[in-house]
Image (cartoon, rainbow, N blue to C red):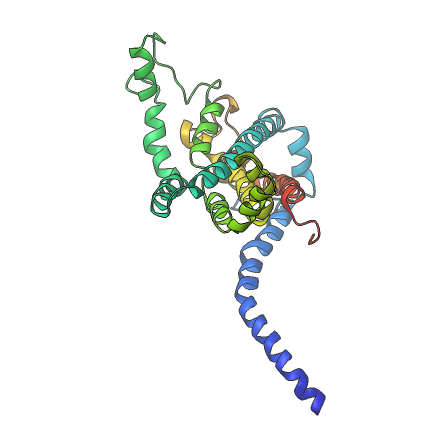
Amino acid sequence: MTAHVVKNPQYKESKQAYVFVFPYFFSFLMFITIPVIIGMLLSLTYFNLIQAPTFVGFSNYVYLFTSDDAFMQYVIPNTLQFVVIVGPIGYMLGFLLAWMLAQLPSKLRTVLALVIYSPSMTAGITMAVMWRIIFSGDDAGYLNALLLNVGFINQPIQWLQNPDYLLIIMIIVTLWSSMGIGFLAMLAGVLNINQELYEAAYVDGMKNKWQEIFYITIPSMKPQMLFGAVMSLVATFNAGAIGAQLSGQNPTPQNAGQLIVTHIEDYGFIRYDMGYAAAIAVMLLLLVYVFSRVAFKLFGDKDGE
């Protein structure tokens, strides 16, 4: 009886913990785990949204790697190029801006942080209004008008319909709107570093800001760096639809801006081949997982893995 009384407070504490964890667990199960499992199962079927799904085994995956020329020739190379450029550059730019803002007074820092963060919240609206006007293919487009006025070109260029320029424009626009949650997390990480560490390092012989960044700042904010890296990867992979939004076409002109997300939308919401779209989505999930593991290797806590 006595032992039961001693254990009872622990039981109550663990029960309360389960109560608080349950909403997150339920949400994770309903909106992430179950949809992923359903998507994997759907990738093994032919499903056109009208008839019931028909089991076809791994036929979708076989077709994806052997017969889908657009996927192998354009989607995978474009996606990897897009991710390799936008991911690291956007991530390093986010850290650099966060570190620079941390050196400013509080009020000015708050205003500038809001200005830098706002494009990530309004990217869809500004892309439809601002970027399509800037890169408009007629002589009224801002970029064409500027180049025509200075005599750099003789006639307007169809920027968003030209395969030579579309992917480059997609990279520029994505970088412009890449300062999202990861940027705010890194800013918070820089601001929460104990200033006594810097003072002690300078006493021990640290000479400049570069040493401060590499020996104090980055090691002291690894959790925020990891979070920023993962968020940057996920946002970069999900930004693929920007090509269709800019060009107004899906598939994009000559598949020049066709990324894996655009390919999913093409087959899932234009051709209504949901089974095949699910197979492409599974490949996207695997790509995100692989790149995320690389981020964990770079910034994860080796003792905690």
